[in-house]
Amino acid sequence: MTITDLPAINATLNFISTIFISAGWFWIRRNIWQRHVPCMIAAIISSTLFLVGYVVYHVHVGEKSSGYTGWTGVIYFPMLTSHVLLAFVTLPLVILTLIPAFRRRWDRHRRIGRWTMPIWLYVSVTGVLVYLMLYKWFPPPNLALGH
Image 1 (tube, rainbow, N blue to C red):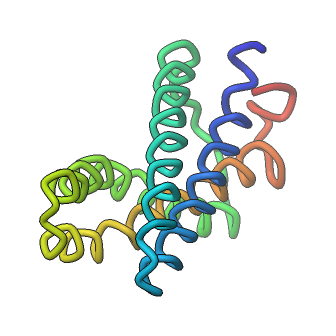
Image 2 (cartoon, helix red, strand yellow):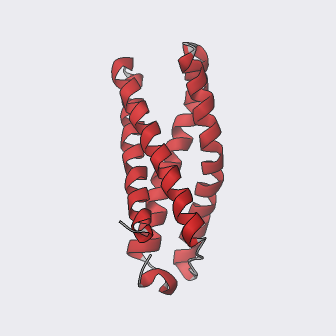
């Protein structure tokens, strides 16, 4: 494995997070917390591994502008902007959602989780879409030959 493999690994970890966040929401909506808990633990683990991989990649490679113009840029840049802004909010929200769960304050956990889940899910999904656009579907010239 090299540093150039990290974008694909990170996208995979985001996709895994998406699956487990969705499954956790599915189970808690049916009041089956025994299945909700392991799904959310898996989502936290995969999201944490993503964050580590993301930081490692960008420390070594830096940030690369896509150079998109036209309709691709019109789709990509608003999605990227909302993804990045909400990603900054996600980590504190996840922590604020976990604290009441550890304290068995289900009312607070539920109240914060109603905000955390859709934001976290959006960030996970758009993270995969950003990767696909940047590295698979429409790789700009500066990324077309490698990551």
